Image 1 (tube, one colour):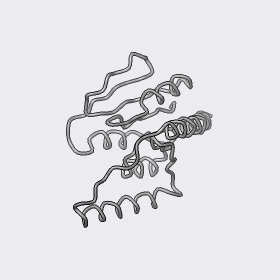
Image 2: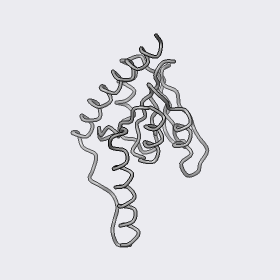
Image 3: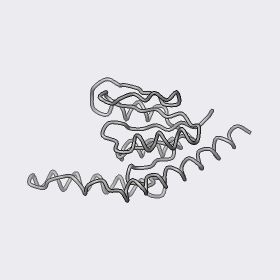
Length: 157
């Protein structure tokens, strides 16, 4: 089965970049969201609209992603499920999540949630998305595409 690129599309800042890379590699891309995004006209790009509700898009992706697939998400619990299923995971800032670092990412996420809960005046939000983040994302996605194609090639033999 050929690799697929799954995009957790709600609030994803790199949909257009991901589409360009997927099309260049000839890999199908699935944009999963609760709605409100413009579907692509490219035949390799499919838009899936899930019902409103907490984590509906994440659950849809987690149920389908597997070895040889790539998931683009900032959602750490979704990333953990995708990594456990054998998928490659890239965050929009270019950080790659894998078996070696997903545990730390989950622990950091939980710690930050606890800190925010303990201090109601702590405002969330990180730094703005930058050109450097976009560049790192493109490099990481390119690496992931090559790995996914190699994995799919081995599975097909």
